[in-house]
Amino acid sequence: MATGKPASSSGEDPEFSTLEFIAEARRPLLIERHRALVEEMESSLADAFITGESDNPRLRQMLDELDSDSEKARVAKTLKAIAEDPHHRDDALRRALIEELCLLREQGGIEIATLQMHVIGVYRATSARLVKSQGQAPSLADLRELPVAMLGKLLNPIAAEFGSPRLGDALAYTPTFAERALRSIRRLRLAENGDRAWHDAGGEPRLSREQEEPLSALPEAERMQARQLLVRDRIRSRFYRDVFLIYLSPDELDQREVDAHPTVLHFLESVEATGHLYRFMQGQPAQQKAFRLGQLLQKIVQLHEMYARVALATQHPSYRDTFVSLSTRERLAAMAKDHYPPLTLSNELTLAALLCPFSEFVRWVQERTGKSDFVLPPDPKR
Image 1 (cartoon, rainbow, N blue to C red):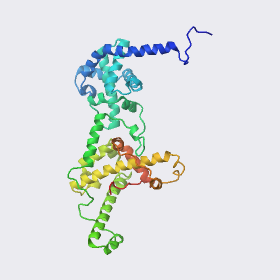
Image 2: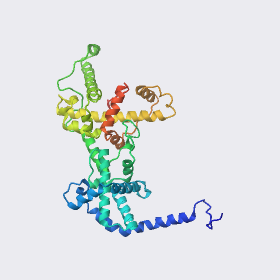
Image 3: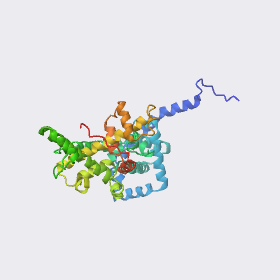
Image 4: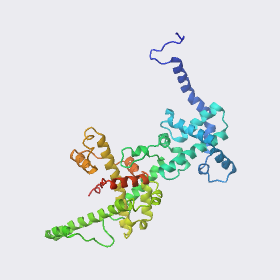
């Protein structure tokens, strides 16, 4: 039966397309109508509004109202709208939120005081999610700068798995937190006044007869150099064994210790601050502790890169079938033979490895050591 509407050669409903076009054209006009008032309201907020650390009666009343199921539902709806709206794809949270509030005020004539309570609720809900993700509460300035793409990760979390190429996609953090993390990483990696070689505070460890006897036929200078390499390799191997096979073992590591460190980086910073509390650091001078901590940081990044590289190769048609029955060590040997390239050690890969939840990293190590499939990569530039 005829509808009286002209047909479109593209198959689209011309009336619907026109309505969409009109709505899209009106959108910036509606936002600008309320932008100045909404921006002024949002700019008046302070960190105390988000943390709730204030005795202000009006704020306490707002926070009580935000705890109601109806307000939580409204906040969740706004967060979802921002995360899914293509208009906000490249926006920071503050800009996107202001535009959404302008549209809410246009549609419902909502009072500015009500919108203020709503924006506080949005920031508080986002902050609570970020605490779980990055291990510490963001400031209001950090929240305002949060990319909407990160908000999508918070609302639709992906399980983080150390050694997975998708680990970076699972983590969400503010740009400011990432900058602080990279500064900490650089400090730990390049510790000032740190040693540049492996040694023990109590002197060189003894070598076995099987290691010592072949050296006796060498000239003295070569013998000393070769012996030093063997000694340092033994110290290095024992240190990593103390960390990955003993400290992180399920029989040794207390769950309270796992829960105390939100991310791998928090764990490393704790070792830096209180090295005397960790058995694998005890008995070492400060310079050697700094050196070993930097080496441990690099080793963790190497581990993530290596296992992520194996995971990518396993998905490739050239390896998919043959890798099924092979161990990680055997897979690495096959990849080395084919000159399979390493992943680029970028800031993104480094952050993925070191902002991985510490609990996930512990689980990953324990799972692989339990299966005897834990492969430790060599130190870089050895």
